[in-house]
Image (cartoon, rainbow, N blue to C red):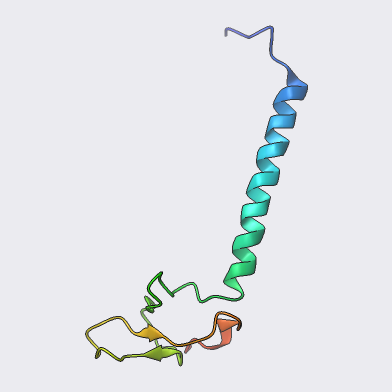
Length: 82
């Protein structure tokens, strides 16, 4: 096995720690957003869920995706029909 004698363990660890901090920040932001915005709501405020939700409004008829009429400031997890 060819080993690099110039390998700097401390620099490598600092790089790994920096990446971990970046990914942790992204993960924390995603968790925070998931508590305020329905994960089934697409960029056009249409519901992509394959189940019923009280925040669905079928303004275009049942053949189209429902409009999500809920607020992004609410916890949606209890809105989904079980």
